[in-house]
Image (tube, rainbow, N blue to C red; front, side, top):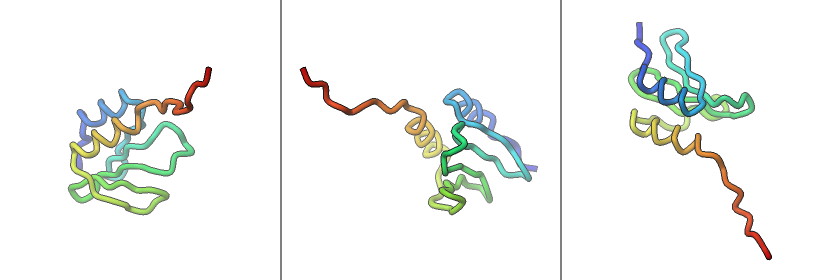
Length: 82
């Protein structure tokens, strides 16, 4: 049985993502149910799926970078006029 990646799950959870292990696969997904992506650990690597289609394989450090970028609040880029 595949052991859950505790450190990564702790980091992902602290950033607001949902983590679970199902059928020996580890899943990380956004808290927003409308989001169309998820990360799945299968066959020794993390895969980014968008709309259920595998896009890219990611290393552990790439997963943490990806999660950090996705967790940052988006700032309004509009310019203020006086």
